[in-house]
Image (cartoon, rainbow, N blue to C red):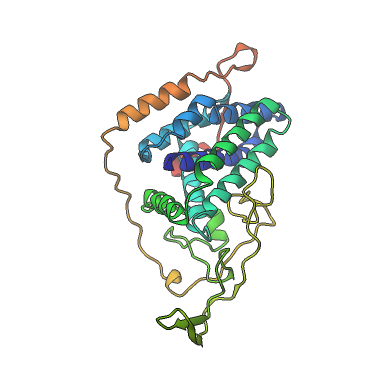
Length: 318
């Protein structure tokens, strides 16, 4: 169950980056082919059914295998250096979104932002659009009735999965939402989560539950009351901007940080314990994704090669 949330969102993040970075370098007529192929594979019925089954979170190795196969589900091909860079960007982008969710339930709104963006990409392909809408309905059915505590468990599980990943991302560094050690900066200003109050007031009650005293205090942040709650319907305003195009010029960026966030820490190497069922996971995923053959134009198996770097020398450096 937790895996479904992780994978649906991560697939969308990967797809977005392919669109925003890769497509400007390829012929226009290939754009929709690649886009449709990846999304069709991503939301294949059997694949989604497997992701929605209650199960433990996948290992990092299994997740990387899914990424690799999805990225190559079309005629597009990425070399190893580009694939590594893409994977790092997608995992850190999703970690950022989960970490900055105002409340645990907003993970669902982040995922809906992902799905909304995908639907914009394929609005002229009714068949694929129906697949995405079906996934949306499944998310509502499975996660819509969860309690705040259950959403907190999901959020905590996801953050534990990413806790040792501190890869620096240029756009985050530029916006000052990530420190040079790869750790994210938590905002201390802006709207508070829906259903909460602006900090600054302490209420004290007696044993009967009656309020007997109020004490006000000042905070370092510039908090404001929450906006309206985002829509959890198939179509609606999500309000929350996390999960939307992070390369948008008009995106809001919070750069205020606490003093502790300004202190730099040294990088810690990621130490991933081997998963005893990793081999079985990888074999199963290979069967799932490997069986979804994508037809190449004109019967050609070659396709085009995508490079996210300017030169081969730059690839080697990364």
